[in-house]
Image (cartoon, rainbow, N blue to C red; front, side):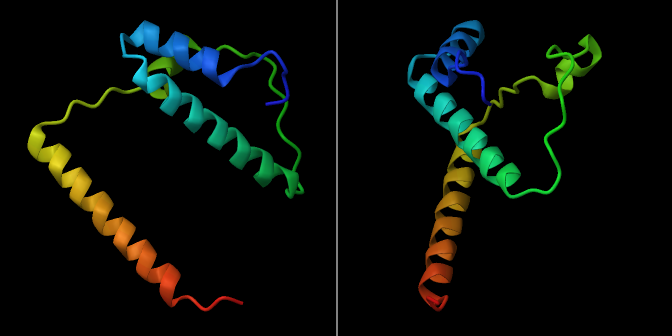
Length: 103
């Protein structure tokens, strides 16, 4: 997180090229990485427990499948269902935001 030479964009470009994904995925992956890093920085900034020290930055070969990326193939019906579920969840979150009193 604190290494200045790390770049979410470079990682996303390399990941997309290795997975054969188009360039339109690079921005989304980099955005997700930056969001996760930001969340972890905020979480650990107020934590009483220090971050664990990493001694080896490469995972064991037996753990690669568990921690590697997963490509999910969806049918048109599954895509429509996911979109409907996301829309429903968005509406629910808006209703919650509008009914919650502003302190």
